[in-house]
Length: 201
Ligand SMILES: [Zn+2]
Image (cartoon, rainbow, N blue to C red; front, top):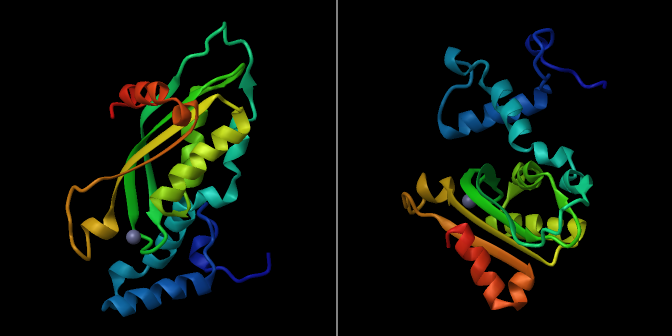
């Protein structure tokens, strides 16, 4: 690496933040109406930059890897596998504002299952990017569909968007619900009703 990093970030174990990135955040602070050189804001650019690396960690991974280790011994279990109330945080790509919500992820296994925590990892892998809720929902479902070849997949995401609650129309407490159902959950209305009921919808 040849780029110049801010001195203060080296040596204390923190990720170095390139000067141009910090300058961009100083520009934003100025634009917002404050003075980036005042004491309380001195370390803010580096902090914000590191926080954004964390919010967007998903770019560093391919969420599909979480589904590569499967268990074939399912003891004949072929009913719905459901993980619900999975909290997540993402950021909307239009305002870079937080999207905070929970997801329910279900699939109907064929001959293999994954460790249940892996479903949450897939969600976080796609959530830790700049997103829109509709695409996040679709990407999680598609990933499970392609990697596990289940008979059905259902993903329901309920979230509130800071770009709505904190600015613009300032609508508090409004949750947006998106869903993606595939396979049997799509073609068979009884299966769909069953999974949505289990999810609490
Ligand atoms: Zn937005």
